[in-house]
Image (tube, rainbow, N blue to C red; front, side):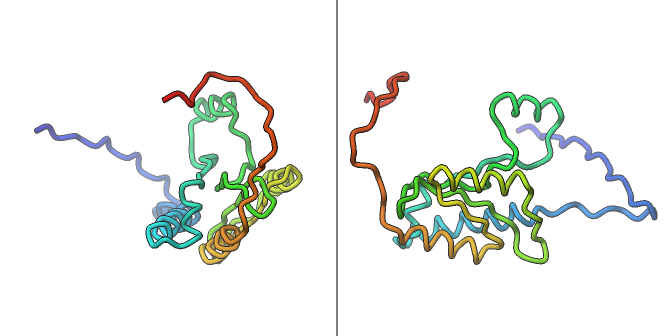
Length: 168
């Protein structure tokens, strides 16, 4: 059995008055994790909104990164303003749902212009685009979206060729 030695954490820079800084809390991330756990629970209970669990994903655009990692991610296609949660399930005439999630008050951050622009662009392209402030509003949005009827296309689809992935 080997013991893993944790690297020493760099001490946080104290405030101007010399008092130590508190470790920042990711209010939004914590609430979003609760939302996803709730959705999984709804799936296990057989609730209609639980069907969205398998179709939802988080776009990891936020967080602290080094400049080199940020530059590499930008080269790979990361864009500012992209919504936090995406549901790839067509319902109610929409192609899917883009949800910008913000923490509940008093920890709500302002909607950035790039986030506003992304929501507007998503809606203009046929996606349901929603800002949800807090856990309860996000649950309500997902519940409402899940109640919309499926809107899958039944017309002939154009073939776009890539490497075949459907093989057994």
